[in-house]
Amino acid sequence: MTLKLIYPTLAMIFWIFVVGVVLMLRRKSAFGSGAVRLDEVAVSTESYPLPARLAGANFSNQFETPVIFFALVMIAMETGATGHAMVLLAWFYVATRIAHTLIHIGPNRLPLRGAAYGLGVLALFGMWLGVLLTVL
Image (cartoon, rainbow, N blue to C red):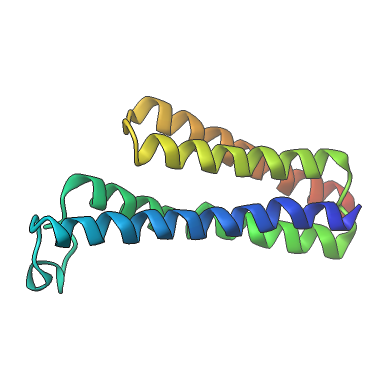
């Protein structure tokens, strides 16, 4: 069962790469269209057009709660907390991160984005609880 946690972990890592590519393409487009010059973003990214700023903010988000996800997966694998519930929670977390990104870099509706984020945090809490119950 331990290997089954590898798949959502690899999917999460892949999604971070996808968001990085979106960020790169949006920033390249901003330079190509003349919407921003290199000297305008050398110190701060505030001068980028909104689509590039949203992609940048979302890319940064990929290094916030996902860090907890990666730690929980490693701890779960080490402690044997790798049952079906843990795998489902891990996949659910990845799905919430994808939804969060699509909302963030798309319509950016804060209530929807917040719901996706909150559900992801609940999944992380469930994973944490699963590890805790295993080690007690």
